[in-house]
Length: 314
Image (cartoon, rainbow, N blue to C red; front, side, top):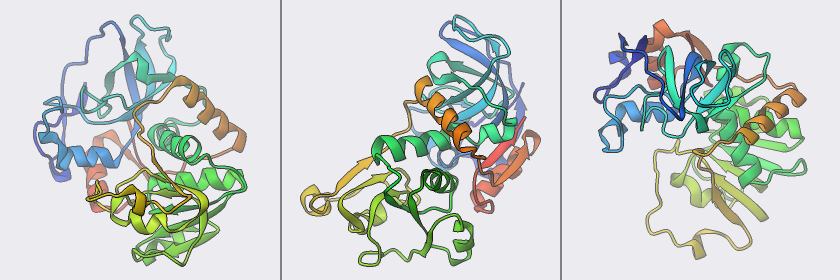
């Protein structure tokens, strides 16, 4: 089969398809014919930085999500030809992931789906909608009466969060630090140019913070009493807080949480797809590439030339 195989830190310009052996099925794992996959920031981090870490299998096929069909069901309850999605659980790090024509994946992170969407739009759902779903409902306990701020909204996750929150009837505020990207936030009720300090300018019930630790102190001061902030992204490039003092950092009567997207379940996947059907949502896509053009897709990712989800079709 054709696949992207990482042997070292790899810039986008160095990405190439190689011929490797199609994986052999083993108990507890199923073989999937990959029809499409979405690309993610975490795969870029793997290529450019994380590959040197001891916990990364080397060499490794990257890719933390995919959509496709069961080719060999092994000892699972899946049927040959069944439409499935897969995500997380070590894909593309602890074991080979989705940048390939076939993927051997553990049963517990493969999920049956019923959808009439084409493969490309289906591929825009798994990791992005699962992260949005967990952040909004598990962590933020979002209700239709809430006002919500998405800080760092001009990314694939941000667009989906706006879509879901608007479909509920929430008042949605969204930020970007690039003025040229403000028009991309037209679906939000209020679009805001973010120079890094918003304290005193905004007050909301819920916040999904995709910037991360860099601006989190400022973000926490935008909450109404009883409000919740969920930090899910690290677009600001700062992963941790130094000298974190929760007593002074978290304003009285507000709450700070975070969403870690490594534990999807069939129940949650079913809820997400039912919601998409009920609300008649169309997964937003930035651009679709053919697998043969995976190098160009990675270059676009590294150059930030595509706004929204990059999807690769096989």
